[in-house]
Image (cartoon, rainbow, N blue to C red; front, top):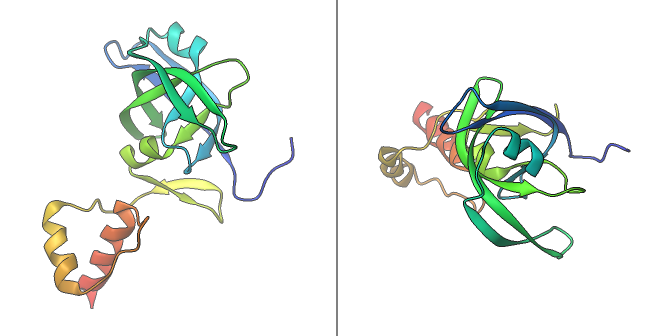
Length: 158
């Protein structure tokens, strides 16, 4: 498979929320900041006891195609970072994807030039909203919380 510009893969561990001893390595997950949800093969999720909590959810793929999949709850780990998130039960032929919600929950951001995940930095807290307003900084639509927090930190240094 040819490498496409701007795409890369990472490994993660998925755990059962109730019994963390039930876990599995998930190799070669596509990091996809354009996908909201994380998608893992249904067989892997079933093996570690993740239940299908929400059935028949409809998702729109990047090509416009609509698919229907079940959703469950799991703990996602990449290195030392972890989060609890909803995960899509992938079917045969589906790519395994690490989506934006999981990345945000783990406070990881994408370093596209190095093609790796890095620490997201300070997390924007409610008290930062006042500092942001007082700083006169404007956030762009699509700014992540960590990017907004970094702007506040940089403004405070001046």
